[in-house]
Image (cartoon, rainbow, N blue to C red; front, top):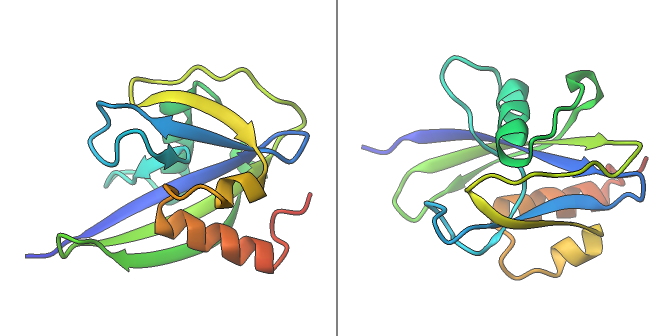
Length: 142
């Protein structure tokens, strides 16, 4: 039987309009050593943005004001195992570049331009589609 997996990602921009990008660790259960954005699975008891904010805290130690977050893209894709993944993507623009402390799920982080993010071959297709959509419609403008 196939199942629907719900996830939420948060694109965090600093004052230079650079986005926070994580690199999955060797022990990450899916796609080790690949580019990742903060976020993850939405648990049954939480709403979508709450899940993205929880994952951001767990993965980076950052806490942000949910009132400043904005949904910019949603997509559903078929996974190789037959399941479906629905992903909601949010964005937030900060007035600084906060210090990040990453969890075991990731081995490194960096702040980079959207063009640099799009140039990465290991960026998952749902996130790539979201970024391309946002760029086409100028949704990352401050």
